[in-house]
Length: 392
Picture 1 (cartoon, rainbow, N blue to C red):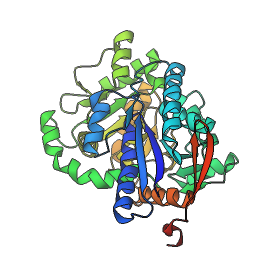
Picture 2: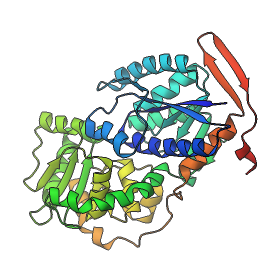
Picture 3: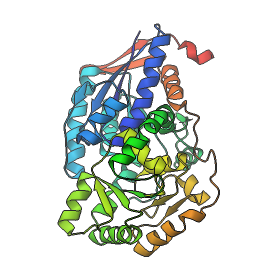
């Protein structure tokens, strides 16, 4: 008997996380014919640029989405509402045993709300993360998604503690970080193309800084955005340029705010996953407001300067390896200058052994010995035997 699930994704980091889980599901299905997991993938279209969307499906070998909602840009309310309406229709049609949502985007919250109102169980990958800044839309999405989720799949012990402190202890699992699964799986491929990637941009290993800026708290604050670029202009030089992988929204805000990048800032479009990994592992330091890239920098042992005032990944901040600087130009420049004298790199600050997705797959199998399906007419329950994995 199939266990039918729907995975909902929409943004670059979610494609990476979903790839690990989809691969674990495929591996399980190859080994077990008694309890196959039938996965349908819904792509909301929150990220729709080829290099932020379809190329990830190609490189990470993710099955082609069964549904592409193509919601595109819009305000948070408009985007979330459009997703919610369309996801609800799909869930009524598919009637899955559960849905899987990833991370903290509008796609995450929309999927969770649609499922909650249809009484479909929700598994949240990367549950429990907190920045404790409710002005961030991502923080609101995280908190609300966790409140309605049935299976909370946490990447770190801190994430588990955050949930317990909020009174959530049922259905909480410490599984590790699925992004580390992907990094381990694809690092060799990235290594194989690193020289070609560097040569294409006329770069030498450890002779450039890599930067990304995309969060609304930075892009929508003209003064803060100007301060970031003032700092990038100061740290860049002919011999040591800043390579800025520019998000489409950031590009628009730079134009609107008349922010002028310096001559030694090399602006490139968003790059595919493998090429980005190659750039990360060869950077002298990374400046970013991305949660995922903070982790990748840590795993590649590259100093990271985070262009925010808080981070969900408190373990690497507390260690001193990753430094929070906000948008203050002076603090950004100082952090880059001090990157050479960082504390010793600490192993295993972030939880994971490269098999987190396999643990998630196992939890899904164990959780749905009784599989609930919801249809337009109401609920029906299908009894299934307990998964043989339960006794392993």
